[in-house]
Length: 114
Image (cartoon, rainbow, N blue to C red):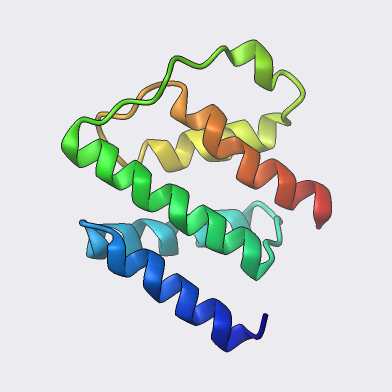
Protein backbone atom coordinates (compact mmCIF):
# COMPACT_ATOMS: atom_id res chain seq x y z
CA UNK A 1 0.00 0.00 0.00
CA UNK A 2 1.18 3.48 -0.75
CA UNK A 3 1.47 6.23 1.85
CA UNK A 4 -1.62 7.82 0.31
CA UNK A 5 -3.55 4.55 0.74
CA UNK A 6 -2.57 4.49 4.40
CA UNK A 7 -3.74 8.08 4.80
CA UNK A 8 -7.13 7.10 3.39
CA UNK A 9 -7.32 4.25 5.92
CA UNK A 10 -6.30 6.59 8.79
CA UNK A 11 -9.01 9.02 7.73
CA UNK A 12 -11.58 6.20 7.55
CA UNK A 13 -10.74 4.93 11.04
CA UNK A 14 -10.78 8.40 12.55
CA UNK A 15 -13.95 9.25 10.64
CA UNK A 16 -15.77 6.38 12.36
CA UNK A 17 -14.49 7.42 15.78
CA UNK A 18 -17.26 9.16 17.75
CA UNK A 19 -14.67 11.26 19.61
CA UNK A 20 -12.49 12.07 16.62
CA UNK A 21 -10.75 15.17 17.99
CA UNK A 22 -9.82 13.50 21.27
CA UNK A 23 -8.58 10.44 19.38
CA UNK A 24 -6.43 12.59 17.07
CA UNK A 25 -4.94 14.42 20.05
CA UNK A 26 -4.17 11.18 21.93
CA UNK A 27 -2.74 9.58 18.80
CA UNK A 28 -0.37 12.51 18.23
CA UNK A 29 0.75 12.41 21.86
CA UNK A 30 1.18 8.63 21.74
CA UNK A 31 3.27 8.75 18.57
CA UNK A 32 5.51 11.39 20.20
CA UNK A 33 5.91 9.12 23.23
CA UNK A 34 6.72 6.15 21.01
CA UNK A 35 9.36 8.12 19.14
CA UNK A 36 10.86 9.41 22.40
CA UNK A 37 11.12 5.79 23.59
CA UNK A 38 13.17 4.99 20.48
CA UNK A 39 10.51 2.79 18.92
CA UNK A 40 9.87 3.03 15.19
CA UNK A 41 6.40 2.05 14.01
CA UNK A 42 5.54 1.18 10.43
CA UNK A 43 2.50 2.78 8.83
CA UNK A 44 0.61 -0.48 9.27
CA UNK A 45 1.50 -0.55 12.98
CA UNK A 46 0.38 3.07 13.30
CA UNK A 47 -2.87 2.17 11.57
CA UNK A 48 -3.66 -0.63 14.03
CA UNK A 49 -2.64 1.63 16.92
CA UNK A 50 -5.04 4.29 15.62
CA UNK A 51 -7.88 1.81 15.60
CA UNK A 52 -7.09 0.69 19.15
CA UNK A 53 -6.78 4.26 20.44
CA UNK A 54 -10.14 5.19 18.91
CA UNK A 55 -11.71 2.25 20.74
CA UNK A 56 -9.95 3.23 23.96
CA UNK A 57 -11.22 6.79 23.73
CA UNK A 58 -14.73 5.50 23.17
CA UNK A 59 -14.47 3.12 26.16
CA UNK A 60 -13.10 5.95 28.28
CA UNK A 61 -15.94 8.29 27.36
CA UNK A 62 -18.82 5.81 27.27
CA UNK A 63 -17.79 3.45 30.04
CA UNK A 64 -17.20 0.47 27.78
CA UNK A 65 -15.41 -2.54 29.16
CA UNK A 66 -12.91 -5.10 27.99
CA UNK A 67 -12.73 -8.67 29.26
CA UNK A 68 -10.58 -9.16 32.36
CA UNK A 69 -6.93 -9.56 31.41
CA UNK A 70 -4.49 -11.91 33.11
CA UNK A 71 -1.20 -9.96 33.38
CA UNK A 72 0.73 -13.26 33.37
CA UNK A 73 -0.22 -13.69 29.72
CA UNK A 74 1.93 -10.64 29.01
CA UNK A 75 4.96 -11.64 31.10
CA UNK A 76 7.21 -11.73 28.04
CA UNK A 77 6.31 -8.20 26.98
CA UNK A 78 9.13 -5.79 27.80
CA UNK A 79 8.86 -3.36 30.69
CA UNK A 80 9.41 -0.58 28.14
CA UNK A 81 6.30 -1.55 26.18
CA UNK A 82 4.13 -2.05 29.28
CA UNK A 83 5.31 1.21 30.87
CA UNK A 84 4.72 3.12 27.65
CA UNK A 85 1.25 1.62 27.36
CA UNK A 86 0.52 2.58 30.96
CA UNK A 87 1.57 6.18 30.24
CA UNK A 88 -0.76 6.27 27.24
CA UNK A 89 -3.61 4.80 29.27
CA UNK A 90 -3.05 7.48 31.88
CA UNK A 91 -3.97 10.06 29.22
CA UNK A 92 -7.57 8.83 29.42
CA UNK A 93 -9.79 8.36 32.47
CA UNK A 94 -11.96 5.34 33.26
CA UNK A 95 -9.96 2.62 31.51
CA UNK A 96 -9.62 -0.90 32.84
CA UNK A 97 -6.19 -1.83 34.20
CA UNK A 98 -5.93 -4.56 31.58
CA UNK A 99 -6.06 -2.01 28.78
CA UNK A 100 -2.35 -1.32 29.18
CA UNK A 101 -1.52 -4.94 28.47
CA UNK A 102 -3.51 -5.00 25.25
CA UNK A 103 -1.97 -1.71 24.18
CA UNK A 104 1.54 -2.88 25.08
CA UNK A 105 1.43 -5.42 22.27
CA UNK A 106 1.45 -2.61 19.69
CA UNK A 107 4.61 -1.17 21.22
CA UNK A 108 6.33 -4.50 21.78
CA UNK A 109 5.75 -5.60 18.20
CA UNK A 110 7.14 -2.32 16.88
CA UNK A 111 10.07 -2.46 19.31
CA UNK A 112 11.01 -5.97 18.20
CA UNK A 113 10.81 -4.96 14.54
CA UNK A 114 12.76 -1.68 14.94
